[in-house]
Image 1 (tube, one colour):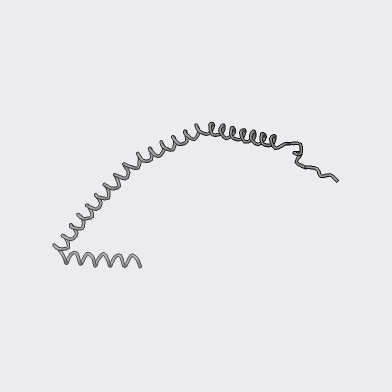
Image 2: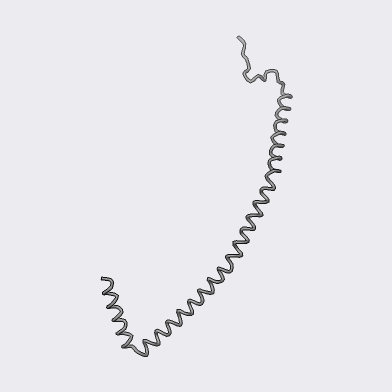
Length: 113
């Protein structure tokens, strides 16, 4: 009874196998290098586009952030002014302020029933 080699490599010597392996590895390296060369320009374009987009967003966001900070300061100042005006009115006319508060409370109570 004879055993047969299903791979068909019984006639190959170690030197031939080594050469085939090296040749296949070289072709794989060449394919990887070729793919990297083709991918490099696309990656550079994508990177440039991403940087441009980030710059545009930053250019738009900066004035908006400055406006929000300034508006916050203005709102805080107006709030302080209104508090002072209301406090001055209550000090000048305490009974009128109390009657007004009672009337407003009564009407809100009637509306929400």
